[in-house]
Image 1: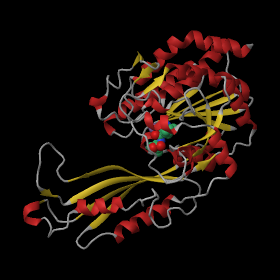
Image 2: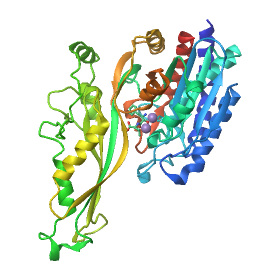
Image 3: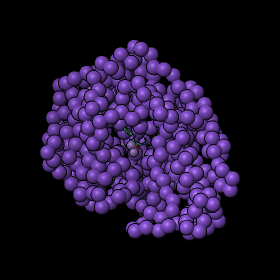
Image 4: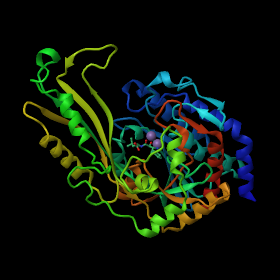
Length: 456
Ligand code: BES
Ligand code: MN
Ligand code: MN
């Protein structure tokens, strides 16, 4: 009965909730680009003010990078932490957007009503689902249930450089009974999910240098080693014909998933043809003989994310460049050791260098894979709450993306994390025209109200 009142309140308040989200989306809090430092600060201020308005003791906490937002409310009962991130990805290529990424709007598309703008789904729209659930609860009951700590980060999209020191320095303040992380997606359009396994992430930037200066390819071509030729040969050798990664020791610590889990995933009837079809593809390109879900949730990968060198402008230039450059990342699973893989990758690159060429490396993050312990009662309670809201059983799933903080909560705060989010596969996170469906925002908010009721 009381929960019904909160849900009704959420329904009535939806237009105002959307207005608040649009307001937050107007702040271009791009964490990786120093030009937006003041905007990141402004997004933190906005959230502190909003949380304070809900009765939280809220503060902006400086770090050597962008500030954290920490807020507390309540003094008795179960203690829940909620985590989200207020920073967003850069918007480029900006000419592919159908609107200004920071002038968000509600749009009616053929498929759904959507909130369009950078950060709509990753992660401002998602974090606001929790705050809106709190708002409706407060409006209905005059107070929030249990004890709640809200912890919002502004550096997630740039590798969370301040996070571990902050967790260590504020462990007593931040530790709760369990963390709720809203930064993942639904399993299918109307099937909610609790993510129980996340992949790790390792990034490497590599520069191959040859001649001391750019050369005329007619005068020097053939006799002088071309760094792009070296780089592409190395990159091409990272996978074999079966889609496996060739770096020595890469598969150390990669477990085969048990048959029972394989059967459970098969039972989810994931439609990989539709998944690929939505992006104009039809064939699985990963490790031969493995299903799409198995690949995304349980297998490691190596991807070349960017490549640069020589003349790439309009027209044509017969240059033999002095340098070539690539960004490579690895998604990790099981017990794979990011540092060991980094070393092995560098050794392999070094071993493939011809005379007169050198390689240099810049590291970008190294987080291991994570697996949640779902044995605590909170998981089943939350699963039931989600199932009630969506009218179908919520699934325990994996996630191909990386959210290293889930593991850090365990390591530094000894706190389990439950990952529940409402994004859809076609949200275009990190890409032009990011959106979040109004339905996901609305039902996500309702889901949190139910989960709060179930856990407190
Ligand atoms: N919210 C995403 C993680 C995610 C991606 C969840 C896809 C569900 C589906 C998160 O903000 C993110 O982008 N993580 C980065 C890693 C981070 C260290 C930059 C990623 O997965 O590439
Ligand atoms: Mn995110
Ligand atoms: Mn992201």
